[in-house]
Image 1 (cartoon, helix red, strand yellow):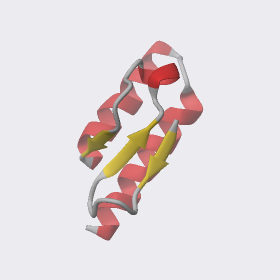
Image 2 (spheres, rainbow, N blue to C red; image 1 turned 60 degrees about the vertical axis):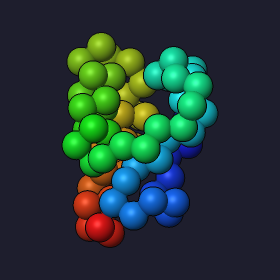
Image 3 (cartoon, helix red, strand yellow; image 1 turned 180 degrees about the horizontal axis):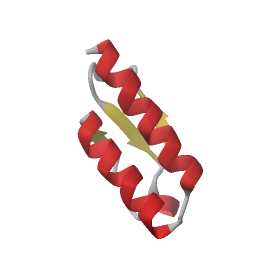
Image 4 (cartoon, rainbow, N blue to C red; image 1 turned 30 degrees about the vertical axis):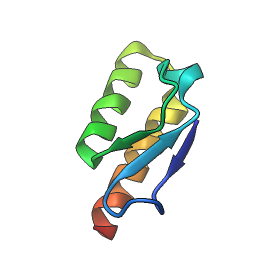
Length: 65
């Protein structure tokens, strides 16, 4: 999974997330949506590193918007 902040200001863009999220297409998320996905991963005890990356990206997207 690749998390990118540079393509869309104030958004978290997630690519290649099929293995973790089961989604083939790129996701363009608000910081809030990214945190919801991170919470879901944490609650399942799955992909906690990816969850932390989503949270950090959400924080950065908010400061860049």
